[in-house]
Amino acid sequence: MKLNITKMIGCLTLGAALIVSLRLPAGAQTTSVLPAAADPVICTWKNDAKAAISFTFDDGTVDHFTQAAPMLEKNGLRGTFFIVINWIGKGNKLTWDQVKSLSERGHEIGNHSLRHWNLVATAEKGDQVNLEKEIVEPIGIIQEKIGVAPVTFAYPLNAHKPPVQAMVEQHHISSRIISKGYNGTTFNLETANRDVDSLIAKGGNWVVMIHGIDPALKGYLPFADATLLDQHFAYVKSREKDLWVDTFANVTRYQLTAAACELKSLKNTPTLVEFELIGKEPGKPEKNAPITLRIDRPKAIEAMQGNRKLELRTEGNATLCGDVLPNGGLIKVRFGS
Image (cartoon, rainbow, N blue to C red; front, side, top):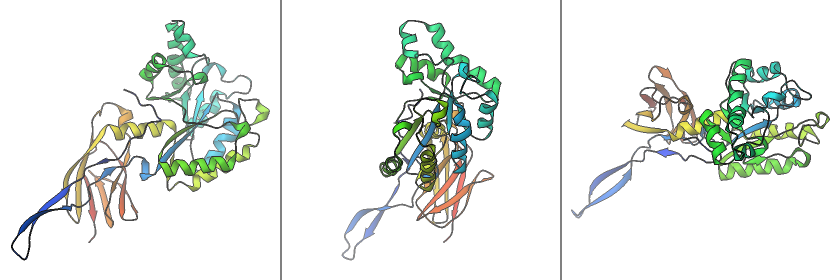
């Protein structure tokens, strides 16, 4: 079953307690519960961020290549560009060379259908042939043109109902159900930045929809001043300690993996924690993304998974282990005294 990306996954914990008997001076005996050393938890978001956001761009106008992507890259960010196959190379739209360049620079290329038809209307007419054509045919075309098949889908006109979504998600790891849309014609920088602060404070995940950037290209809802979007990306970057920004596909993979994993604690001493990260569906690559684990204990000096050294960071009194793989072998985290 596929994931609707607006849902969140909570941390998975392996809480434990140590029960000890205490002998009181008067000889009476009682039982007390003391907390054991902290076990690992699976972080809700990569790097234990408080929230996650994906910037997605629809329709494949040229300004996505000339303006949006460079603004993202300048701030160390990557986005998802949803393209319509039959629009490529026409009028104000991207060429295949530009689409391939975006992919090679680390951006995601997503499926926005073959001809941008209303898929709900197509389904309600009983036209299964064209419904499947709109959803499935772009996958092979994009794979052939850029060497990478799309794994996420954006509904044309945002029209979706269960029968359409069911077909889409047979062929993609997730489909975009919008949680935030930026209307370029009325975009307010201060409001957008405050909204990001609110997202971080509440925790959660946004999938932001953006269309046109440059009004001269006559894309849908372009920005009156594109520099405002550039400044917004810079603000988002400034919040990167608390906010994970990545492509729609990467955030989806993390969520699917976290939901399909459990931790098995094997040893927990003051100087060594040993455990395994068990993936429940190892045959599905979208459920085997590297994830972040947190141990609420400071002074970690080394983390290994099998023979592979893990990224190790200290955040306050917590230790973060990055790039942990499901079913990747025994994990050992050593601590100093």
